[in-house]
Length: 152
Image (tube, rainbow, N blue to C red; front, side, top):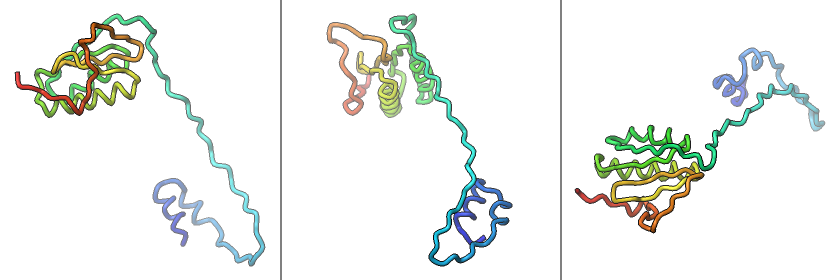
């Protein structure tokens, strides 16, 4: 077993040691090309992931979250993935954790085709793709780079 590729395949568990050791040594064939038949590898079909899409226009709740630590982002993500609009009040978080949470929420809303909007200096609204937010223009689009948290 002098072939490093075969050694690596055995190490990674992609081939059995018997398969590698039982193979005959290659015989020199000169310049003639030899057709080598390979056994077909087993194919495992992949099933597409089931994507749950909330029905349009059926918003029955809005979740308000008052996170105290960054790990509270899991609650926000789980509900937003279900199509529930989430209001995030960051008044109880440190500025560093609040900025980190807004970065996470921005990526979450971008990845799920939603929107994140700033309501006040420390309150943000995450709205799913199927929810339209209207108002008199007081709600400004959130920009994570320009988020500053003033001491209150």
